[in-house]
Image (cartoon, helix red, strand yellow):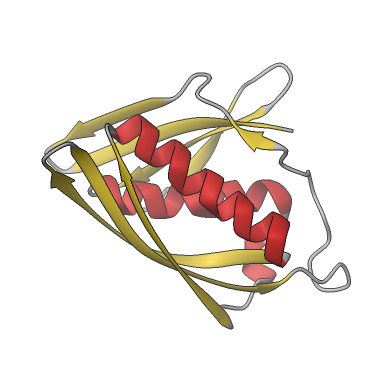
Length: 142
């Protein structure tokens, strides 16, 4: 699979659709697209690691919570990230995500700022999985 994500037209916010061989890879590429809204991720070195563990009742809530947690790290620790490893498993009540993300503190000299993300939304959220391919779509409030 070559295309990791693409932008989705939206009149006032920014949307993206991310792809993967499975749901976990689609979540990894959604995280990359999420940070690509804010900075050029090719300039972000994976020097610091954070761990994320989440549980949610469905895949949509899990995607929302995953991206919201990454925004939390950005807002509270000034981190921008460029590398992600996600594992997703089913639980009795829904889904569990265990992930690691790597990045570094935002540096305006190294990471020219693009667009600030204010919040995640459920607007236009879509998750589609087939046997060999998954896609997730999300819109962020800017």
